[in-house]
Image (cartoon, rainbow, N blue to C red; front, side):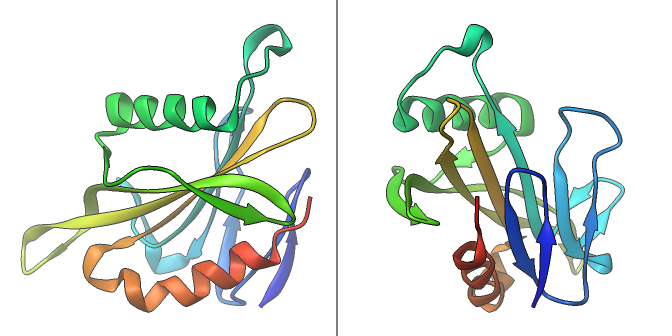
Length: 156
């Protein structure tokens, strides 16, 4: 694992995973193996971003997580699978929820289901950092230890 500085946070990543910085402000940072990213999206890896409400408004982590999930369902064709659960990241109480979508990788020419593990972590300034750990459903268990190690390495 290699430490990666991502501005407001640091996270370790596997040595062979690249950090793809956004081309424009507001876009996500992607950490993935080269083969995990296609023209149509991330099939294996982690997508990181942050959100804040206009005018410095503050809402609970539950409300912010619910809003993020709703946005992802509407804009990215993700479907929630289960309720958000408490999770601690770098000593901060956040939320964890599983989502499903269609993977950009097909198996035997057929679309494969993708598992997306969303983790949201509130910040002192009222914003929320979110991480989406992504892998095809059939490979998620193989990637889960890597995802969990990355999450445990997070520092704000």
